[in-house]
Length: 95
Image: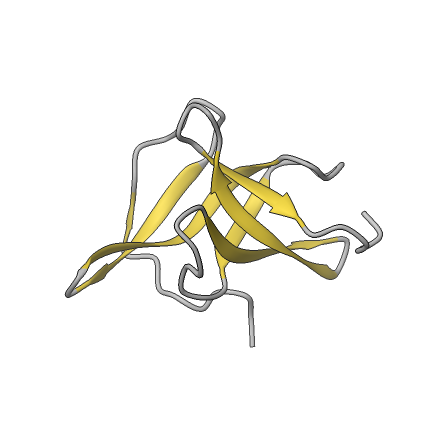
């Protein structure tokens, strides 16, 4: 089974940092499903597709994951000061 948990129905507007959010259409409204070319803030990895793994557990972050050199890197998607999606990898994953 892959990293993608939610289907990506449509793309949102491309962000200034290069990322493109994709959303799922639900009855309750659109939900973030993945971000292509997402900037990785605290890791030394290039922008990549980051998949939402769970429903948001707080107002400020959403659990997410990406693949890097054959490994799954977990972390969270948060908004930066400009309101754009940024991936924060958990520490201790050897990246």
